[in-house]
Amino acid sequence: MLVRAPRPKYTLVGEALRYVIPGHVQCSMGCGGQDCKFDNPSSWSEQDQAIKGLYSSWVSDHLLAMSRPSTESIEKYDVIDQFRRCGIKTVVNLQIPGEHASCGNPLEPESGFSYRPEVFMENNIYFYNFGWSDYGVANLTTASKQTLTCVLDCMAHMLAIPEEVEAAFLKRTIKAFTWVGNDSEDAGRVYESMTAALRCVLKDMRRSALGAEEARVPSL
Image 1 (tube, one colour):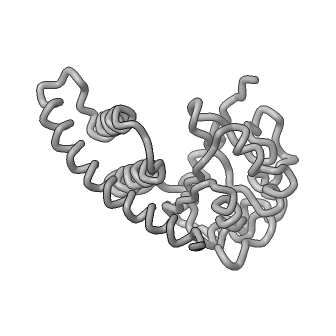
Image 2 (spheres, helix red, strand yellow):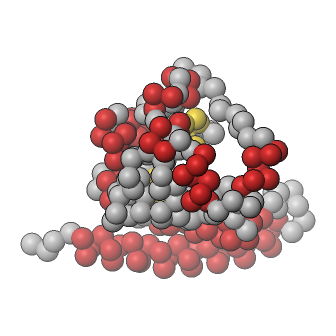
Image 3 (cartoon, helix red, strand yellow):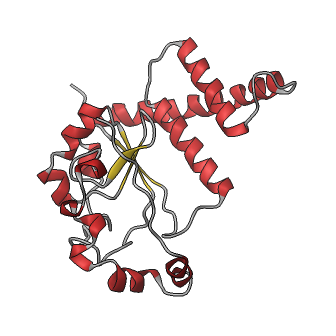
């Protein structure tokens, strides 16, 4: 079933006010409290829920954009099982702990989010938190660095993958982050130097991942 991508409905006046009114005040006054539409699945049509119970849509075949889940929605709509069936293995959270505290149900005190990240990790779904300021975007340099770190960390946890798969993965990653095409006169030099650097980073990340895995498995 095709899922319609949601479109923003912000106004110029609303955008201007967001620059002068503190975030927690905006949340308490404008989001609707427990009836906040982004924390209330009953506010959405089926087309707005690529994952049932979450305001969500597919950005690509393998990338899902979604509103924050909650402990209640995870349990009520069996979000973990839906993620498994859709092949979702990683959650990247861009919220800052304590953000939108007036929306929906109270935040989880241990995490400061509307859910416990451990719920995903206990079910072999990786969790990353790169907090961005609400109603804003991260510095491009910072955002790119965080994204690249996330990509490499995910790859590092694939402890045994064929050499040709790793090489192809690194090539596509380098192209995405440098915008250097295969036909560029600098391509060979850029790919060679970047591949060498990223392989060193991956080696170190894999060593850390393997150590963490061994520490988690009890010895017999």
